[in-house]
Each structure stands twice: as C-alpha cells, then as structure tokens.
Length: 211
Image (cartoon, rainbow, N blue to C red):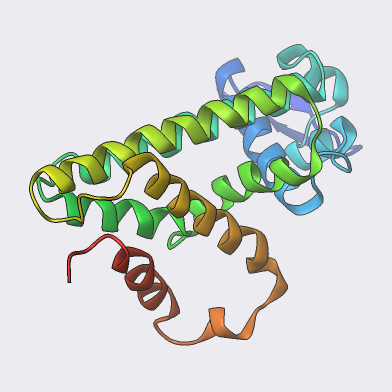
C-alpha cells in the first residue's frame, strides 16, 4: 500500500505525507538554514514554506507566525547545544580536558555546531525584540554557568590560576567565540591557515594555566 501523499509547495509535485512531529522538525531545520543565510528580517514564512516543500497554510498549522517559529529554533538550538556539551564532557574528570572540549565545540569545529551557534550569534546583532532577547540571554547565562563551573573546579584542583573570577573568564571565552563566529563569513585569511583553531584555543587557554 502506498504512503499517503500531499501537495508540496511546488505546483504539480507531491511529497510523502509526514507525521505532524516529522513535518514540524523538517520545517524547523529548513528555517534554521534560512535564518543563518538570510537573517531574521529577510527570512519570510513564504521562503520557509517553499524551502520545506509545503504551503504557507501548512506551515501555519505548526507555527502561529515567524516569530514563534524562530523562538522554537532558538530554544531547540539552546537545548541541543547544552546537551551536546554535557554529553561530550560527562565522562571527563579533568577540568582542563572538559574545558578544551567545550571550547573546541564552541568555536565551531563541527559543521552542525557552527550552524547552530551562528543562528544565536547573528540574532544578537540584528534582532531588537524583548522576547527573542530573553531567549538569547538565557542561552548565554547557561553557557556562563557551565564554563564558570568547570573553571572553578580547575581552580579547586590547582589546574587553573586561582586569582581570577570564574564568571569573568567564562565571558571572555564567550566573547572570543562570538567574535570568531561573526567574522567567519568574511573569509579572514588567518582562519584558513592550517591548525588555526588549535592555536587559537591554546591562546585562549593560556590565561588560565599556571606558569
């Protein structure tokens, strides 16, 4: 028996009908790519619907408007990012090793992680909306808490210098990651040099380690 079909956003074409949760996931993924490529202001529900292979009425069955869709994208990115960092460090007891792993992920060493974080970072400079701003704020405060906790552990065990405030250091890492992500699309020559990221991470870690 053939799977049910529904008309896509392209005239004359049909696609396999997805379950509601799968369709919503598909729309969110296409929307995320468009928000990175075009930015929030220039991404429309029409463009998202076409990229997802559905009509706008179908899109509106899942999301009330563009803003609600965007907030779900941000929430998903926040939760997935923090979970990814937690899973990557759960089995590591050494604070230095844990911090290295998170910093490596944070500066975008994997394609999907880089895409996710560019959504967050780009939104900071182009969207002036209190609700969206609060969503971003919660992500960065969660990041601060995670990084500061690891740094504090390293100070207690004597791995990191003890005279520095963990929350201040956490925000230095966040600001470095923000700067890298926001300037990456410029094609800066040094970013293309071999081993740039490991060198940059060593530089970032240097301020923490005892001489």
